[in-house]
Length: 218
Image 1: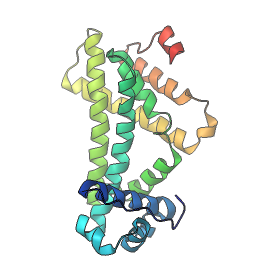
Image 2 (image 1 turned 60 degrees about the horizontal axis):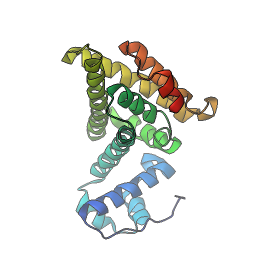
Image 3 (image 1 turned 180 degrees about the vertical axis):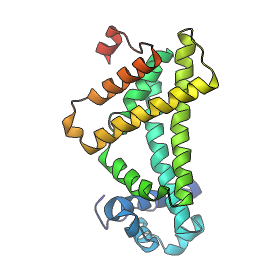
Image 4 (image 1 turned 135 degrees about the vertical axis):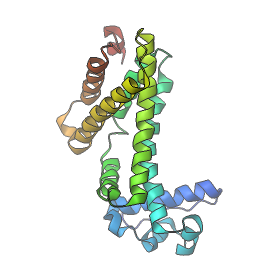
């Protein structure tokens, strides 16, 4: 959406209206950064009054926290949608989740720009810090659950401490490759980062997530 273009504010219910305001906030941040996301600018983008924004969000910081949570949550949800495309085999489910985390639309320049705008303030802003931790833990919990299924299926059920350690490490690998893909996507061939990610997870767990037939089919 170009700078200054207004969203159509839909009158479809409380949650939909809140989401419209969050979307307008993200548009402003994408165009002008956090400093440019004033209540007035957000209201103009959404086509509403500043008073209506205050009806849904007590203050600007509450709106920014909700917007950051939306960015983080959307990336996790996009990765989770890949689980519906594979069967119940735990290995394939983990491979699909890692792959979806490292290809578009999760690897996306706009998403990175929004994330970078927020992360710069997360350490000094308690509300944004809380949103960051919640988003991080939400993603890590998904990874941990998938790893638990894979290891159990391989006859190596793991305890809580081991699952936590593996989830932290896998999350770090995905984060690093995601950053590379967002910052310099032209340097990598289609699917290259996803294959590197899956291979790294296989090495970490000592479990082959996909055999040759499954790789060719993917």
